[in-house]
Image (tube, rainbow, N blue to C red; front, side):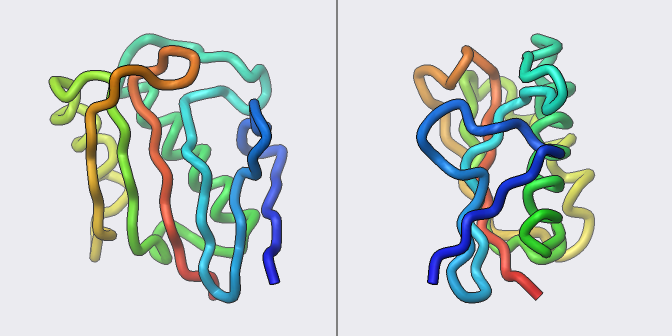
Length: 126
């Protein structure tokens, strides 16, 4: 059975989607963008700071779904500009220091609210 995951510690959905959905012991997050969960605003244009906010949002959603970063098995990173890859990779890597998950990274023509980075993940619960 499908379980909807929701938390006020991460940005509220800005469309018809859930922050995450759990099926069995698998948790699938929606893409997180660098919205501050309290203000629902993008606070910076700096890609490193945006990536950090995205990762903090992911942590909050995972926690609400009773998972942790250590439980993540796959991430997909969407970048507005592949030239930002090294910076995003450095920040992202600080969150996955041991046994990092599988990952894909793609450049897209545009992201919601014209942010520079969006990340989604799949985690095992428990």
